Every structure is written in structure tokens, then in C-alpha cells.
Image (cartoon, rainbow, N blue to C red; front, side, top):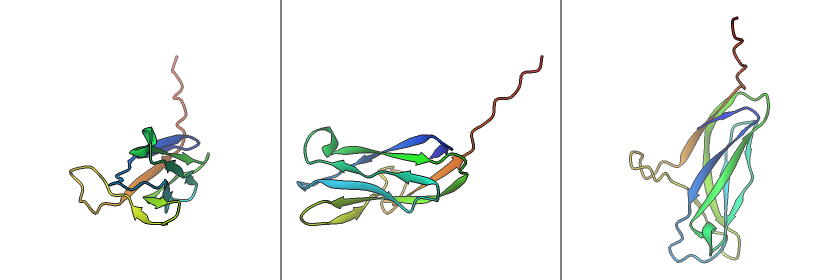
Length: 113
């Protein structure tokens, strides 16, 4: 995924509950410097029971890239946690990292006139 410095990008995360009824905090870990994401909660009912959206934000002036992972952690009482895996059929079932690149804001090209 590519983010322009000072902007955001989103990652949809499917939550596979298998009858698990606790709330799950979904967060990104290992993000490169200058990129951050606030954790989101998947409640056990409604639209967020099976899918949540993480928003990644790149600070202004940052140019970086790197891998990161997504973690689901039960909030109470069990405190279980699992790393997310890709659902893309062309990736291994064990693919658990994504790649993010932050690019600079492009300047408009002046028109010749």
C-alpha cells in the first residue's frame, strides 16, 4: 500500500470469530517511523462483528517504507491474541505482514505557456 505524506489510507480487516463472543481490539504493529494507526474495536454484534477498518496515517514530511502486521486481541476476560493472515488466494496462509510505502507530496508541474 502507498500513502502520500500527510494523508491516510485504510485497511479492511475481516474478523473470523468462530463463535467467539468477546470484543476484539484490532491494531497494527511494527509500523515504520512516522506512520501510525489507532486501534479499533470489533464488537460481537452489528456491522463491526465481522469486519473493521484500520486507518493508517503518515506524518507530513515523512518518506519511509516497511512491513507491519495486524493483531487481534480479546479485550476481556480471556486476553487471547492472534495475528492476522492474508485472505488473498495467491499468498500463503501464513502471510501475516503487509508493506507500506510513504511517498512525498508531488508538486504540480508548471504549465508551459
